[in-house]
Image (cartoon, rainbow, N blue to C red):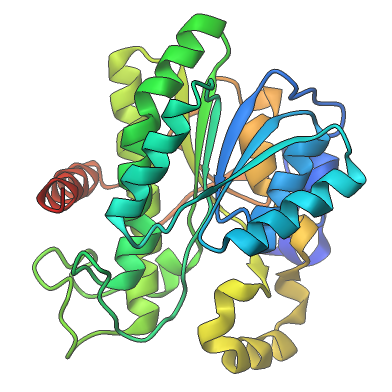
Length: 321
């Protein structure tokens, strides 16, 4: 049924489906009382997410590596929504130093924080280590967001407590966590092994880590009694700059599987739905595709693996201070 809905665009139980756009799933929602941080908000579905949040009245913080591109998105938003509140801050998620600098800068602005969208990422890139000596896809897609979330979490908790408004954290994962994986699932002992590196399996590993992170974070937030949820999503297949390392391969794939692909407004829909829709109040630790809850891989539901990844990630971030 999920595949049928994907191809036809028919709505699922939520009333939305693969053909729904970010504007459609947020129609009528007033976000003027909310502040949102969006990583990777300078391009692709991140930029569309920023535009739609601004359209709904939210104070949008675009966290981007390319400040010129981020400013272009800000100006584009202001042209269509002149009263929009948009700030841009520098963030390179492959650098833990940059993550700490961003968090410090944001916290110094003394703003509330209602929503954190961990959207940025790299995909299928050749083997490379980050400046912290960590395999680049894992460093950018998971570890940078892990640290960022931890550094902003107290602000999110306090905002939710003071305002009574539920905070929401959304991790952008991918269906690739089902399709591409190493035999070890998460390579705790061989994370930086160049000889056995696979660009696709490394990507799948990082996207599995996004779900495991959201699930373990959700468990911890519930244990703390915090009014903050954490969920993960697969946005769909969208031709964006994320695919710059495999453009020809993806173009050929799209040629033969065009019915499964979305445009950018459709690609941002699930993010916006999970982050803003009132029907998801209290929903946490779930995985969404096409604005409907779906089951991830059995590895993604492994609580022991999630806890192990959390401890592993904590050690990596602490060792690079």
